[in-house]
Image (cartoon, rainbow, N blue to C red; front, side, top):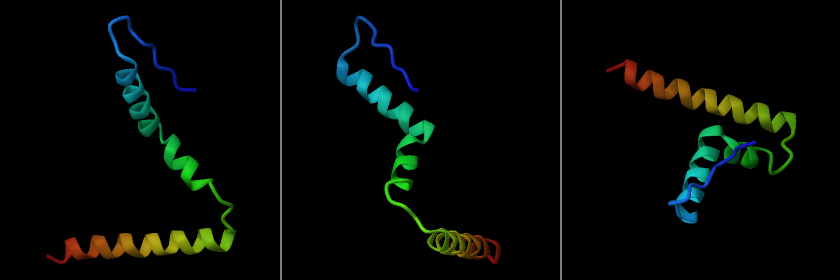
Length: 65
């Protein structure tokens, strides 16, 4: 559980910004987006395979130069 302590001389907006940054670093928002809908195992496998293909293409593009 993330926690942000608001200091006496700090505005609420500044504390909210710090909280959002902590959430982003912890990966909470990306995890929520990932689990927003149920993903069938076949869809998950297809997504991972396409990501691996993109990653290898990206790597081969830089290594051939």
